[in-house]
Every structure is written in C-alpha cells, then in structure tokens.
Length: 207
Image (tube, rainbow, N blue to C red):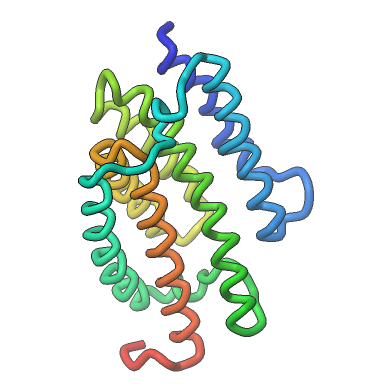
C-alpha cells in the first residue's frame, strides 16, 4: 500500500477518538484534546511515514489561496447573516458561555485553536498526500468523515459541512496550504457567534 493511502487509513480512526475526550468536557480541555488527537498524533504518524510538512499542507498559502480566502470570507459573512434566520442555529451558538467581551474573546481564541486542529487534520493530513495523485478523489475522501463529525449539531450542519468541506478542499489545494480554510472557518464561526449574541440580546433588527 502506498504511503498516502496508508496515512489516510491510519488516521481515520482518530475522527471517532476525537469525540471522546478522557477528562472534563470544557472548551479548554476539548481544545487540548484535539491538539493532541488531530495535530500532534497525525504529525508523528506522517513523519514516521516520511512526509515533509509541506506535503501535508503545513505551508504558507500562495497567492491563489490568499485571494480565494478573502472571497470566501465575504461569502461566509453573508451565510452567517442568513444563518440568523435559523432558530436552532442561533440557539446552539456560541458553543461556550462567557462573561463580558473579554470572556467572549477568550472563547473565540479557544474555538480558533479547535478549528486549527480540524483544518490541519481534514484539509491537511487527510487531503494533501492523496491529492497528489487524485485531487477530487482526495477532496471527497476527507469530506465524508468531516461531515459525519458534525452529527449531533443542528441537523442543517451535516449537509452544510459537506458542501463547505468540498469548497475548503478545493481552496486549500489551490493555495497549497490548509491555512486558507482555517482562516475562513474561524472568521465565519466568530462572526456568526457574534451575530447570535446580538440576536439573543435583541440587537439584530431582522431577527
């Protein structure tokens, strides 16, 4: 079995393991757990199989990736506004409790760490080695477990995450880095969290 397929199959069980942190289930503990399961362990496995960092998408994005990320951020802002019309989404987010705006910022920084691990894992370790031989096959291969990882969230998120995973996979392979999807994912999430806070406090005119 060639290295890319071996890496993919070796890392796939981590998608299940990530859902079961061994200790407390606070946001900080979850972030630390994912840094181990989705970043540290895959990095060790990839290194053991002889992959360089740039071969798994850990690389500064090129100009195409930066341009695509900026376009997707604008689209993410529009989708976030549309999401405020879905009551289940507004009720579910933000996924953390906070006191004051400093608490909100701390929560978003932890969410950023969590999203960094997700993008590094799905759009980095799972995607790039396979994409060298079959780009679209690799995009779909990483996207199915990514969408399934959203089970348990509001129902609309599973099909939405599948579409997002395809777009993110395409953008990252264009940009030769997982960084574009990470930035878009974090920006879109933080902006939507902010809109949800405003909606819950009655500060959005259209909600």
